Amino acid sequence: MQDLGHSAEEIASLFAIPSLPTDVRSFGNGHINDTFLIRTPERDYVLQRISPQAFPHPEHIMENMALVTSHLRSAIASRGGDPYRESLCVVPLKTGETYYKDKDHHVWRMTVCIPGVKSLDLPESPAIFLESGRAFGMFARDLDGFPAASLHETIAHFHDTPRRLDALRNAVRSDACNRKAQSEDLIALYLDRACHAGDLVNQLNAGTLPLRVTHNDTKLNNVLLDEKTGHAVCVIDLDTVMPGLVAYDFGDAIRFGANTAAEDEADKSKIHFSLPMFQAFAEGYLYECSNMLTENEIDSLPLGAWMMTYECGMRFLTDYLSGDTYFHTAYPAHNLVRAWNQITLLMDMEPYMPQMQNVVRLAAKKGRST
Ligand code: ADP
Ligand code: GN1
Ligand code: MG
Image 1 (tube, rainbow, N blue to C red):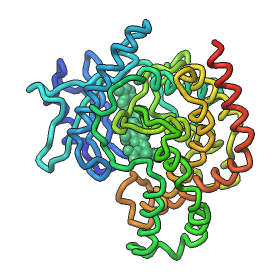
Image 2 (image 1 turned 180 degrees about the vertical axis):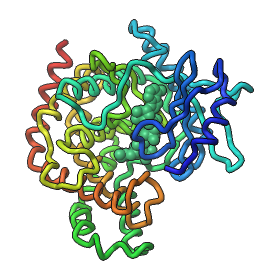
Image 3 (image 1 turned 90 degrees about the vertical axis):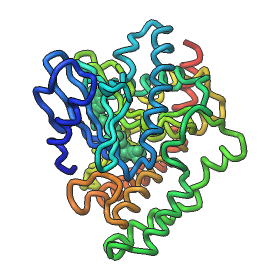
């Protein structure tokens, strides 16, 4: 991350917070935005500079966020929850706008920091992962019926896996940083699976899977969990809330949380697909939202796990070959390590597909009967 600490402090004071910050520090492990924790005597805030590489129209994100959080607040209140703890709350500028554009045209926004929560990079237990499943299942339910057409598409073709495959092929062809030679074996493993890249989008195009409003970035650290009880509190990182398939949300969560290792673990012997973790997430997710899903959607969930792992691995590899312009990296081979990690997970997951199918069918049956 660039050192933006100084400007973060100045920018924080432009927002409508009751007193000047007493401390400003980098926060969280997100790969996209630059995130800062802003401490004030009254409460803490989260200040973020939205990544211009990821989001060409950050103002669209803020418009989406206003609509989505307001809808979520009503849905949460009507099911008896606490709308100000279970949904993000945007802090406006002193002048009333929802974001600040700095002299370099970078967009900054602020949200209230939810106290007494944690976000994890590895689930500590199946029970924690089940909670994360509940959080995303509730999120799906709360947004059922939200007018999808009112949302901007903040990143076009975000989970269009065939396009992600084309992007990989282009990056291999241009080999802009002379990195292809070190990754020939890995590139081959991804291209070997090219015939399956369209397996989800083809069902969407054929009308057998419905488009819904989805989160599209459901990794475990995008859910805040109560520090003491471990219960799900709030789904965050709403930048990619857009029309999508439920298989994307289910699958991306599995890709991250049913891996026995962190997403950037380099030791392949530690990377395995965990069926118990898969089952825990499926039970939590389908407990909350199986009633709104079609049979085809339920059957598409294991394929979603396969697809999101495949797609995310391709995205890491594409970014590595293109010179690490998209994801935050901590060292030069970071994206290469992540891409190896994802294909290792994928190969370990593939033999489990029939068992995953049984798990989701059973969990949906259970969810529908409660
Ligand atoms: P990115 O798009 O870079 O992933 P996120 O919005 O997910 O950015 O924020 C990065 C991290 O900051 C999160 O994983 C979480 O740990 C923390 N975080 C963000 N917003 C809040 C909030 N309102 N309250 C508490 N923690 C937060
Ligand atoms: C990014 O923003 P963050 O760190 O929660 C990325 C996801 C990837 C993920 C991989 C907007 O998520 O799509 O799956 O990294 N978000 C965006 O860890 O590209
Ligand atoms: Mg995030």
